[in-house]
Image (tube, rainbow, N blue to C red; front, side, top):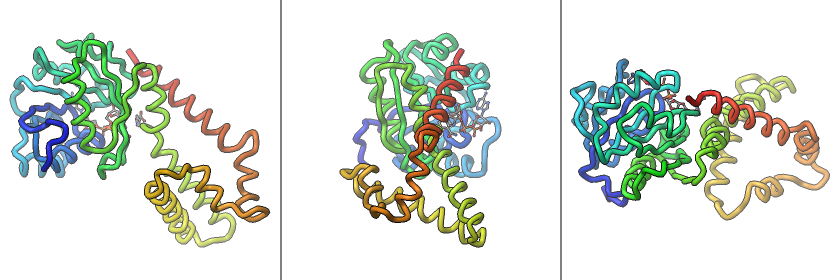
Length: 271
Ligand SMILES: NC(=O)C1=CN([C@@H]2O[C@H](COP(=O)(O)OP(=O)(O)OC[C@H]3O[C@@H](n4cnc5c(N)ncnc54)[C@H](O)[C@@H]3O)[C@@H](O)[C@H]2O)C=CC1
Ligand SMILES: O=C(O)[C@@H]1CCC=N1
């Protein structure tokens, strides 16, 4: 395995290996460069398999680590930070993926000021995630590079200089996969209501979202607006549908409200 991010020989503790923590662990295991300790009170079968196969310590004694990744629910911050603290020594960087929790919230509970606040998303589980990240002022360039390499194991990483933007990242790409899945559900439901057998409508909607996403991925130079135009014949069926979606109270207005609600909720989760 190439070691572009300089992960070889680095040690990491992962606190919480549910959906997102496990996705990160899968990425690290595939690279096979790190020494990993995992703390997880309810280890899944898959977690146990990875730890056994890779020799990762699962719920073993704490030891100083180069990085500590916190992946518990925001509501479990106190207990998660208590579990993380024994792994955090001088020079360690803490990477938190907790929605809403600020770098200051983390620094107040851990023996370090070097905190990276990151927001990945669930396509990380197949190495196709995208993560927004912010590094506190006390984070060194080397610590930030280590955090970048850890997060890059499951997809792209976009850094922001203003911590407040992480709440927006959360509302766009952190929660975003759910919007896309819900869109597929709604398209299927509308198709069924318009007369298709329910299962067929579900298959068509799913294949459409998959195919459109893949088309976008394979044509990175082409914007979604242009891809949309290519579907839309003047005076045709797509134009008729888009007239509905583009109405003042249409999809753009709904997305604005949805993103604003998620951003607001992220703010409420801080502290
Ligand atoms: N699910 C998602 O799409 C995303 C979630 N996040 C954030 O990631 C974090 C984790 O979310 P999920 O993985 O979805 O939740 P999850 O509930 O699947 O995983 C959390 C894990 O933490 C474990 N845990 C609880 N207390 C603990 C403790 N004291 N020490 C160690 N482990 C402990 C739980 O047993 C559980 O397995 C959340 O803070 C969430 O905001 C971030 C990006 C996307
Ligand atoms: O719903 C949540 O709070 C988490 C953060 C982004 C995606 N899931």
